[in-house]
Image 1 (cartoon, rainbow, N blue to C red):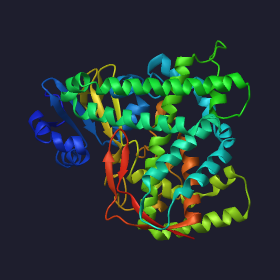
Image 2 (image 1 turned 180 degrees about the vertical axis):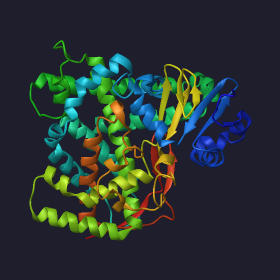
Image 3 (image 1 turned 90 degrees about the vertical axis):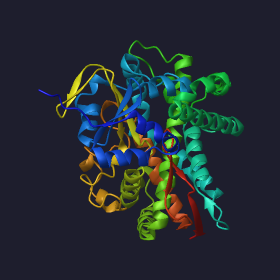
Length: 442
């Protein structure tokens, strides 16, 4: 009996398109999905291949139904970890379980509730950078906003603005270097010999020193702010011990990287979509005004911002910041009668799953009303924060922040597009490009 296999893309085709793939791999993968179906094998070397999939059932199987047989690939456990350490995002096995159990309570909805005023104040302050005089690229403003929200939520007002700016520069430069390493593995020798990797590793060490200084200053003052840093310092393992300094630095560094990157991308894409669909701006504006008139607290305002939430969720469907999910299987597995050998590289395109014509009505259309009854109904095909035990720990934090940011933006400004199409730059996350907008004060 002939075993079933996934269709293959030959190494020659990969090499012919390698320069395009470095710039933007999504069109190449889309062509292969159209030609070969929802899962294919891409040969990237003489004895090296990756399975690409946009099969939502397959991803659900890997993340939830048989998640114990799958681990993150070396992209995160080694390549990303090289720059941000072994924290929750990059660890696996027992270390991951231990850290997840320790940190999870800090991101409970009730804990985040105590940070909402800080988040709102930061958003209000950062959105004052918007100029109504000229056309502006909104991404840098949202990038600063999201970074400042993480910084203030972690450190209250203690951190020196120059130090925070330096942290932002280091984390973003490290990501750009990592993308080059991943997409141009054949230049690995040059990155090493030229000292480029060494330079970024030294900068990462500098970031750790900045964070260590901020933490020690907090510990020496003995003051409480009930921010994320206090919650992390309070967290205790089952034996009553607290995180060691090196582990704490890893977790904080990862919070900076993961906590601002995806949020700033999502906010930019959401504002671009609102610019193209002004009727949804007005719906958010009317909802926000009526809720503000009731003078409720921030958690109740967020809970009732249903239109705003629908818009954010639809934006993350069309432009998921975490646009791919990678996994490696420990033991042999089978899916749809195809045998998957141990240690197979699996890469799932969340971007393609979220636009799959068999899963979504009018998949390329911006239709926030599809989320009128929430996103849970789409849990088997909607993965903006992943799924299963490794679902993003900061999903509630991110959603609260994005709802507050978008409603504040629309309450203060009308948004008009100054771009032809929404353009993207797929790096470690899906980043916006040329997000030029014109703002008019309401």
